[in-house]
Amino acid sequence: FLHQPVQAGLQALNRRAPIFVDIKMVEAGVVKTGHKSRIETIIGNGDDLAVAHGITRTSAGILALKEKLSGSIIAIGNAPSALLALCDLMESGDVSPELVIGVPVGFVNAAESKERLRKIDVPSISTVGTRGGTPIAVAALNEIINTYARANR
Image (cartoon, rainbow, N blue to C red; front, side, top):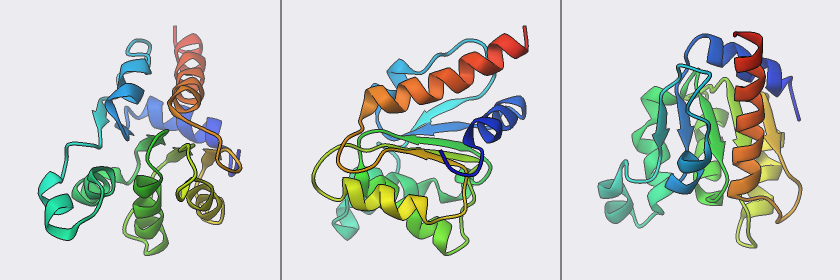
């Protein structure tokens, strides 16, 4: 937990900031009630970029959605490549999300992507090492949403 991510998430929900998630499984798990934020899946956006540049569909989705990501909540539970693409955009100053939940799982770039996220001055929640995944991304985001919903009944 860096840079007060819960507070940042609550403020973003209050502003009805969009929520972007890396894959449909994360979207399926996110609570749809108690907030008015739109939820959009990153994968499936920019598939033409993925083919043209030989990159993953999730990193292409980040690039395709670049103009929409500032001020948003972004939850990545599966795709280290998406988190790396997001880190590139944040480091270059092109994107400034309100909150990043970066907990991709696996042995290929998962630990590295999360370590890189922790070096960026953005409210974030991440895990250390190869552990993480969809359930952790969903649980973290849902707890912020549920906290917001309880405070705004």
